[in-house]
Length: 84
Image (cartoon, rainbow, N blue to C red; front, side, top):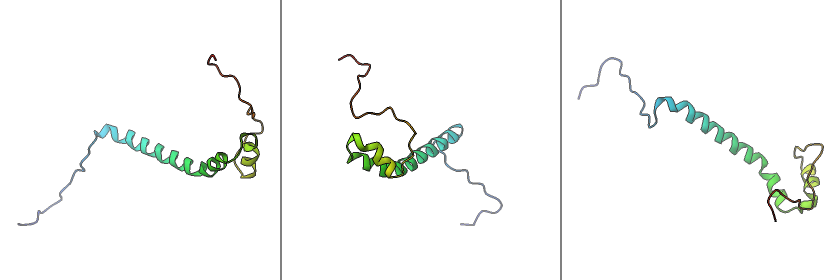
């Protein structure tokens, strides 16, 4: 069998329509950003799982978590919008 001469262009095999490629790339990038954020927040999640609710804000501040100046969180549950 003789090799082919000249320029041969090989088109990539796309399993999705070409107009969907940019959307899929954007979705994959979004998922990657979410996983990166999840990895960054994981130490704080583990800290909160073993800290009583009353001490969670103090524990997060001690661990260097980014916190707002004020909180509306309390150690007592509040009534929600659902009837009891």
